[in-house]
View 1: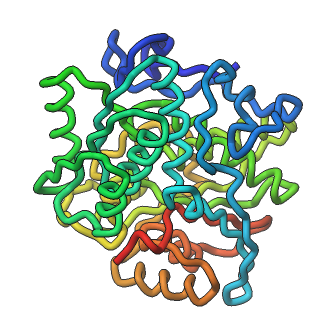
View 2: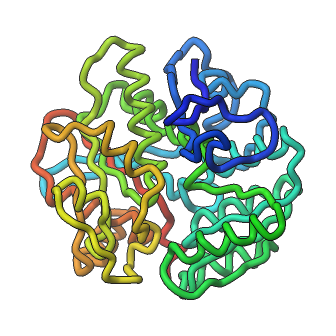
Length: 357
């Protein structure tokens, strides 16, 4: 039965309040024992069809259109792939799945105000869902975040605090705010709820394809999206009695690729504070250790994409009818670097091209 627990000491997530780390040992909470049970699928919209599988049946449904995103078949240079268009969620990014389930927990716990730190997409998403369900939000963003994302947050009516320096500085600033005001921190990176909502992407892919894909290519920032999808496929394998899940390929920008460095047994040192793939400029991925633990060195892979390959990938995708932001386009650049394998290939496109200027 799916449950949220501390990944170190096993403490079950508290039934009240909103904590980002375990109060007992200081570790992150994670998702354990997820099951894929098609007989429990509901006639509900979006990813809420899987509500009973996720064991969140007592939570209010905060649906704004998230989930059940299209899976579109495309061809490139004799290589077929399927585009999972998370870019078509309500705010324009995959973060809406996380925001929906997080806001549901907040409503259930009668929390009326939150803070969050974000490079743009998570902030725009949580601001949208907060506004839609009567919760006040303040978003801390790194200085220089793309204009369309900032405009989106402002139009929604959330407060913005712009923080100088790299992405990590916004995170530190929001932690200071939590200490100063004792306000709830709705962290998309540290809270475990999003792992369950992202696992439903794997459920959808499996059902849309009618079979298990051969490989899935996905961007990694803090890593919740990648890890949640991986967990989803593991649950499907256990349910249908298949030993081998899809090959998982994680993608980071070369300018900030800490997990790629660890994967290749190299030292990582942050040397840049900006990249076109701003959504993945995370020097200390919250879910990095869990991802490395779950991957198979002889099967999976983590790639780093050079900066000069990101924008051309964006343009090539647009010419194929897929309009995404640079962070998303990295998965297509990765496809071109990856040998053709058996089974169908799915690329997870995380953010809409309208968010980039």
